[in-house]
Length: 125
Image (cartoon, rainbow, N blue to C red; front, side, top):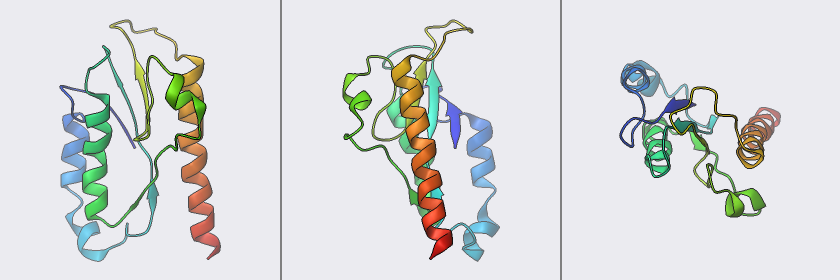
């Protein structure tokens, strides 16, 4: 699940959507499903980590499995722009055409791959 970062939080439309999932919560249909997160912001220290964590909270209430990125991925420790254990992130520096760094690309690929691997394992159970 992804959202731009606004003042350290997910965008209002995503929050509105998540707030509308009461029937899914009551039925438990999302329980046990994996999820990972990504975000972008216009500046460093723009609140990416808190945005990633804010997206996790409603999904934890649904009983979903939150997938993070382990520190065994060296890019988590070397990136100077975006990405961490909570999910993938990108800093645009207020430029619409700012390319992802190689580290940001790797972190994004790994979170996607990890969610997919966990989903496959859950299906095969």
